[in-house]
Length: 270
Image (tube, rainbow, N blue to C red; front, side, top):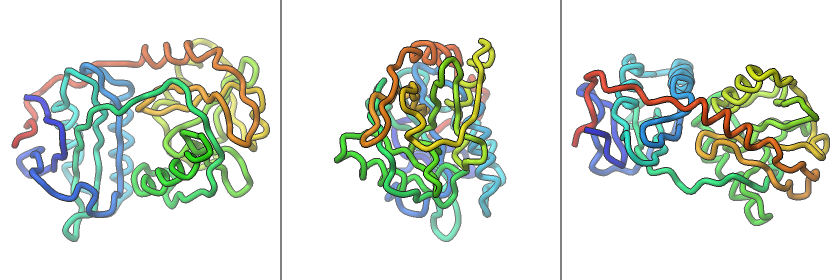
């Protein structure tokens, strides 16, 4: 029995479907999402590790979090196109682990970007607590014709997208923002960088302002879309064409693996 679409809560008896509640009630503390297509996904172990690592940094983390995550992975549908999300939320004076089983929303291979009007992040290394503020950034740049907002730090240096990681090509070198620029450790970007290294592609890191990316092929990476090519930067530098995008998407496709097989962990119930 696979997990049904909707919201589910972790209980002493395993994952249980929630008949009704305000799904956004309570502050979101940690979240992690990945795409599952016919039972296959990219970097599931890495998403699992990132979620558990983030939980470990939050007070009141459930002691059975690993069992909850493994049960969620085992219970996801093996047919169809899904974008599930694990969460830790404040509920009822404590914290609760929850799973949202969601159909994958529309995806794209290209996107227009714009510089974010400000940096709202309070916990730049943890995915979850700033998601609403980051979504507001994307909404803020939409009237300018952009689908993603690029966050820059106080010195104006490129850090990451509101809901994405950024990589760019400088000649034959694939470049990432410098490690000193605090950001979410992107699973998708890590998969691309490792595949590039395996093929002998030079890898570099930079701390640069948007203008320094003029002529560069810019990749916007996320678990949902995979690799999108930035076709334009509103009021920003002219960007290069996506000549290497097919190569990057092939790297991501090669990283797909089947989800864990069912090992008898309790499945979602009604």
